[in-house]
Image (cartoon, rainbow, N blue to C red; front, side, top):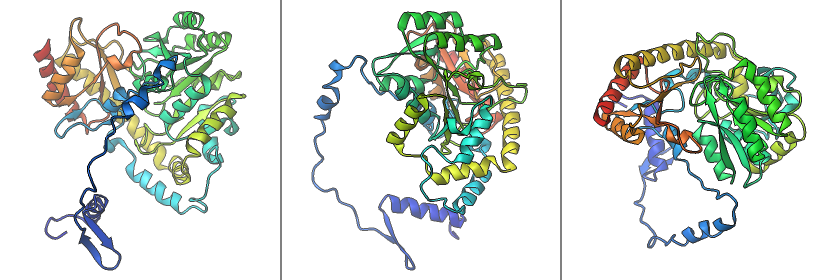
Length: 444
């Protein structure tokens, strides 16, 4: 501490890291000591046999259960030092309620029974909180607590569609959902999205042509386009699905990342669905932290028991301390303050990025400026290679997300998704767009 002028916390974390790497051992009451050198035991094994074992049954599968996480890791992986993160899928730590989360976790740990086994469906109070947020006639008894939106989507897809079945998806759509579907052996079938959300006429055609029984959508601030399903289309989508005997999986992932100029938000589709067509997924993660993985699955009717059974088999339950911390957080005065501050900051960042793009890169088309979420969706000029631009941008010091992984079939054009929430502030947004312009000049 004296030599490097650092805090006791920094020293403690450094020792913990060294202990985790096996370089030191700690002895209570005595101190930390250098560990004995670790020597590998014998030669490395031969794992080449796994190539045969992992692919031998592929010929018997209707749809190969390929696991391609590349579209997800782009938004999860931290860029190299010095590279600005326009590819991130979560708000920067400066936008996260770190103090409020730490206080909530500390209070949760002191709650009576905090480390006991929770109800398999989740804590009743937390289920009630999510049910109130959905609205309509949804009750706590129709809500299951899940470990983040991705896990909830995985449970829903497995519950609703057997391997080999088609599943209708928006086009473009979230790559993580496409990866989940393919990993489950499902066939994603695209249904185009315009600025008013999914097109009902094409949705009806897709149900008729494929016989699908599941449609996955993001009616609010769709990823990546930012579109909001138009009021006239909401009832139409539910009617089309009901007539097809199909479920609508509603991924309501960024409802709490609304911008300050958005105005009143439409209710979740689940709030206007008395017939159990909608399986609703809502999450706290985007508005808090990547590690605050608490979400909800809401459904009505017999499907609820299937969702519950699959979740229990997969993961038993969400750790109780995390559920207790979620209750402490959303019940504290800090929670509405955080949401207001986040809403204001997201609008500022969006406006800075759209302004910088208009000045520096007017050739990139921005068909829709969203009033929620954390990113922009840009169409590149015809003939421009998005992979080449992404590589050139990384060399220039800014990480982008190419558009191709967002399409389940052939992409109609080249696109980019730019996040304005993952960087430290507006200065980095302006600098990142300047670097992107240099990359564009290199490859155009």
